[in-house]
Image 1 (cartoon, rainbow, N blue to C red):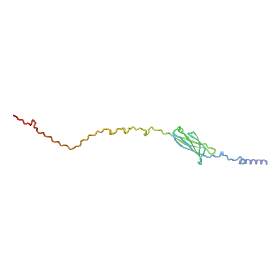
Image 2: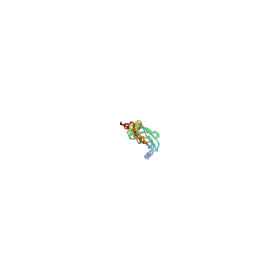
Image 3: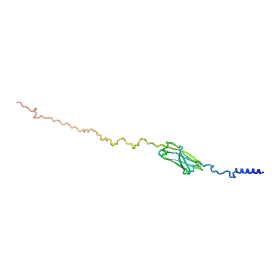
Image 4: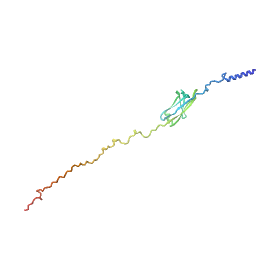
Length: 200
């Protein structure tokens, strides 16, 4: 009879422990609760060598609410650039002119990473940085800067300075004067041929 009583006490004790009535049952552990998801989006950007640019991203919850004051880590082609803090979900990272000049022309991978916190899971996003080579000046000078090889019109002798020989005007034909009659010489009295010689 005594053994049955001890056995009954043991069974009750085991049942109490298994149902948690003595403090050993289920508890609300916040560390095992699933974290809310975060959504990170990176904007692709293009830049010309000789200019600066900014990398930018948006960090939201899955319902579109921006996460404030969270750290975002930036990478370019796998190389760490630095970090920036979100402001109402937005974060930027500035690339200087010298940073851009050190990049080859073409596409480069942007990676932004949010490592998460006690409330939100981490997330990553990728974008493209397109670097465009600066335009090289052409060897052809501007038309306005090119001096003309043609002499100025004032330096060219004027056509009026060349003497032009014109034919003298022919006299206009007038009435032809009729020839005056040639006077017939009358025999002179002193002419020896006309003197009468008297022969004695």
